[in-house]
Image (cartoon, rainbow, N blue to C red):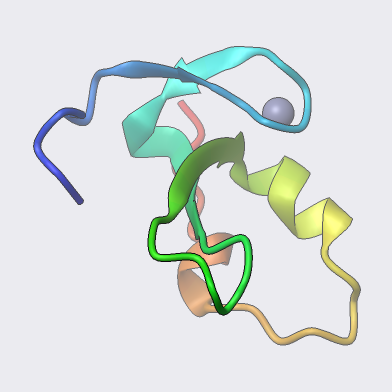
Length: 69
Ligand SMILES: [Zn+2]
């Protein structure tokens, strides 16, 4: 991750609009299309990301680590 965020930076969940800490967030580094030469970073709560993703899509095990505090 680039240096502008540390673990305790507050960011906004792109699904619910609430703030959360980077250490608790899913980091969505999105390339809008194959032609795009830049990416945009979004953040979300893990549970809000996993509930939006179709259940047929396998997810990395880190999505299921419980970091809720
Ligand atoms: Zn959320």
